[in-house]
Length: 278
Image 1 (cartoon, rainbow, N blue to C red):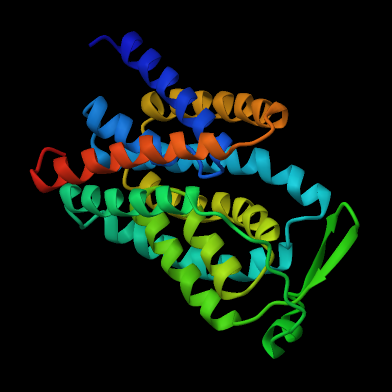
Image 2: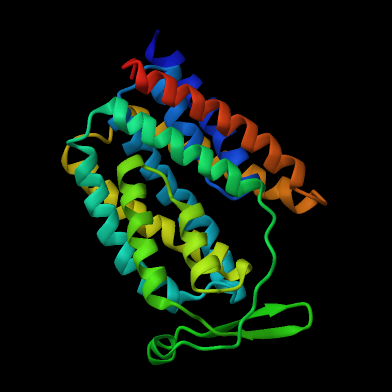
């Protein structure tokens, strides 16, 4: 395969990944890594390095809008980022010593979990109870709605912090944003409203990925020839997806399409990992 053909395939694949990721809110990394490692035979460590850089780019672009609208809780994001950054450094370091087939199997399991989370219906949960630590750290906040700003409290700060540490390890190990795990930490454990959880998670994944990317960069696993078309393709796909989403009345069917694709990719990753083909 020529360099030009390889670049074009990566560019088109990354565009599709960014489009699907933007429409479903799970990011494009879950599609990029199987595309590169299984579809094009790229070493999984280089695939993870390219995915991490694309996560940084897409998070930086999309998070700014939510921060401007006042939905993102920056104090929660910065506090929990301590855990995710530490976890990301641990995960990225571990990935350098774990065999590629094992990483592929773990990746497949996380993909299936992400697919289930993408189709699971969410209900807005707003609690007014405030944990003492949340009050001390000033994590409680408010966000805009059609009827005005809604105040909310934050609970189980310690549990959320530990879950974020795990999310960071998975992010660094697999090169994804771990958005599903971060939303679980804030939405299910800390009882932060779902809308705030998803936007704050989006704000955080770029910082987490940057910590992991430093480790991959130092080890030489970020190849410009692979990373550049991935970043350009994912960004263009994410921009296109956000425009489509605005004009789409319901994204429910899109989530099911994404879940089917991700489950198929997960099965491929697990099969190839168990058979040592990655």
